[in-house]
Image (cartoon, rainbow, N blue to C red; front, side, top):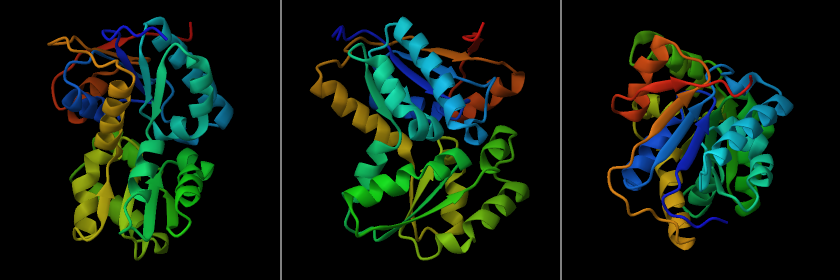
Length: 270
């Protein structure tokens, strides 16, 4: 593997939601240069077949490798659940690969206070059974309840946040019997941190709502330290790419990254 520390970190998602992960990486690793790719032409991934998700993810991974990325961060739970092994194979010894599921599984199973954990995510993530299987494999004493919440991503993408519509949808999902008596709730989609406060309020702050973004960023930092690949350069320049562009994507990207950014359109499927 090319050990050059100034190579960028590639981050990709099915849309702009993965910017929550990119933002956490920027905060934890301020010297690292990011290349973000949001596959907005094909979102959402959650209702696509596994084969389709693998195809999209492999092409994006190939592009990030062409950009000499030292790490590929799969900032999409659906892609992590369905295409992680393919991306690892694609990367080979050219880049490290980090997903958003394994670091969270390690985090929750290392904490003995959690006896019953809930997971919400897209249909693709939940139907894969990845969270349930990995959590129980690491700690069979934890019970895991999962619930597909497919309306949350389009709700967030369309800007229905902190209003009566979003509160009603969130309440409808979180009131389901599957999520009763949970100690923690994993936000199994990188869009969901945007509505974390609303979810906390629903549970009256009595459930640990687990946002993968900071967990993944800390995991990545430890991985770079272990592999002697931390970048010490100051004031890196980031790139933000999307496969389709609308003015609205530009507007909501600020919600996810917490500062103004410029999205560039690039077509990897020409």
